[in-house]
Image 1 (cartoon, rainbow, N blue to C red):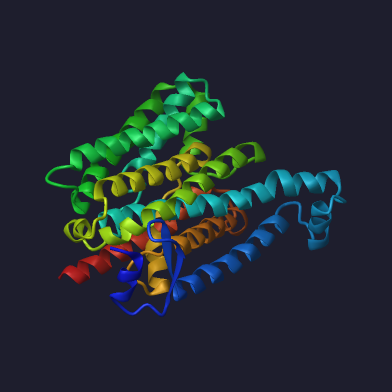
Image 2: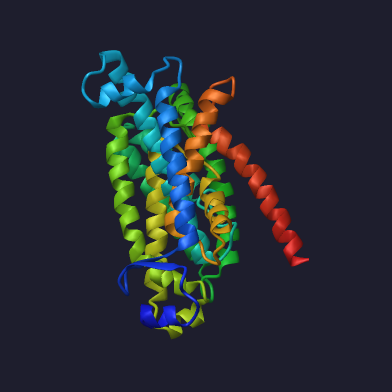
Length: 353
């Protein structure tokens, strides 16, 4: 079915179409307002992230750095430490949020996310194995993380693929695989040397402390390339939200679209995990928060990415400057995401009763 015909089937004055018939993004005007508002907050908080710290800076000092007139110490603080970390928080949060949105769209279930379904643990397992057996260089960690995520997804997919891929079964199998991988990770950490275990454990909490320009640039490039592929699967995913039978009747390539979306989602979460470890609950909560803010039936992918970046940036600022102790950002996201998960479970339980 042509995009124009689909748009004529219902009221569409609030929709903006970006792209063409096969590769496009439908952007609701309210979702665009949500994305723009979140983007403005991201810019403000990024400025604060650069200014705040044990070595406080002024706006004029930061401007001097970008104009090439800053002192050496100030340039190091801005360009090597604070700005890369703030950019990583926004970019990684967007990657995790879009990854979660893809899985929730595929399964049509708000509880589907890479961390709940075991993909983050799979990436973490691959990272640990690469750290132990392949020397721990950054390319090896990325390769191991990606291989671990793909292996976990393949296992979940094969176990859940029975009479068609059902969302609830996919999630339940993922939870079981996640528990097994978490046990495997604990066993691996108990078997390796103490220094390696300490490094991997700190990584496993989810942290942005290790972000440098050398790690951010290739990781950010990989994430941007994957995000550029999202419009190619967004159109068939919108049809999948109607159900497999209805999507097939409109000519949508269900299997390839679902597989491509899964691969993109795995690549996004694996790229983040390879650098910062498994940061939990951004992928779970950001899509549903964005959908409720936008007031749409489907998850707006573009706005979800901006909101996810905002959420991780706020969590990192809280971890650095609000809590008296210096904590990994993953601890903050776990606490806030846990509260959100409890609320979501209670809400879903009330809906079904």
